[in-house]
Amino acid sequence: MASNEEILAGLAEIVNEETGLAPESVEMDKSFTDDLDIDSISMMTIVVNAEEKFGVRIPDEEVKNLKTVGDAVTFISGAQA
Amino acid sequence: MSITALKQAPLREHTRILGVGAYRPGIIVTNDDVCQWIDSSDEWIRQRTGIVTRHRAPRDVSVIDMAEAASREALTSAGIDASQIGAVLVSTVTHPYATPSAAAQLADRLGATPAPAYDISAACAGYCYGIAQGDALVHAGTADYVLVVGVEKLSDFIDNADRTISFLLGDGAGAVVIGPGDSAGIGPSVWGSDGSKHEAIRMTRSLLDVRDFAMGAVTTDAEAEADGDAGQESLWPTMRQDGPSVFRWAVWEMAKVAQQALDAAGITADDLAVFLPHQANIRIIDEMVKQLNLPEHVYVARDIVDAGNTSAASIPLAMHRTLKEQPALSGKLALQIGFGAGLVFGAQVVVLP
Image (cartoon, rainbow over all chains, first blue to last red; front, side):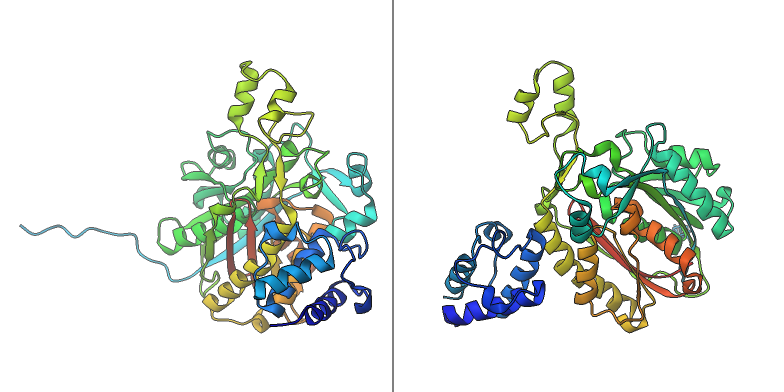
């Protein structure tokens, strides 16, 4: 079980690998599309890598609801519980 | 009373692809052309899809015309006369008649009659489905030579204003001839379907909706839209897809299928010379290469850059171009994998003709 801080750090690493964005720019209140400029296809790559890293399942329907980094951290944390 | 022994067709040990042909129609549609219809840019389309141009056929060129041109080249390249063909399989989802098939007319035009002929509806996996069946027919002794064609005129089933798939699609035809070989030339097919995801890539409406409109049961576009998700200007059925879901399935599920095809053929990625994935999107291709850990020496077909996504035609078109540009790859091992609407998928390792 990872803490929210650990999940955020892990996500930042995954986002960095996919997009080259600095990990510290991946903050809880940032929107994947509007702030981080991540398109829907890159988002899927991030989702699949996050599933693997955190051992959770994030269904396609759920991905649409993950607007901000905080949404993703909350979902992953809940799915791990 | 003794029972007379039944005779069965003699089995053949080996099959292979003997020749390949292609037809690329003459109208070139650029990204700038596409941007007249959707709010986008050349750079955006290149980055997101890898596509620079796609070919489209004029109104008077049919699926059968394109199939014929590709088939004639495949027959010549295989050194086989049409009269020797024992079956004609045409994979297409854009022949605009439910019946009769494109395959029967193609067989007639080529002079392959009375060879059995039928169409295969397996969208972007259609060519690999055709190879699976052609291989089995020659193996089983049901046919000596089988013509397998992948052909699409997708431009008849797109909505230029659609942002989900239409701008990716192109027209074209590719064909191969399968026949007996001296050694193994077609590995076991790994193929399948998942109809629970039939809405991931779909048509906006059925032909029955078109009929209802023609009969006056549906009188306006507004009514038609209320009753479905058709584009505003047209009742004509056109393609749509849920891009991100399809991307996820195509990369992570299909990488597993590709690996199974390698395993079934008893080889590893190191033994491959060429990777011929369905040309759906360059990002799917690049991510699959990563997932499969393909070594540097494997030549990866990226015909999509010029041809767009031509559904059933994309793999034989990519094979044809690869061999034209790299003739030394003839006789080498290639992994081919098709996947698409259904959802359906098919993969096999083949020796290039």
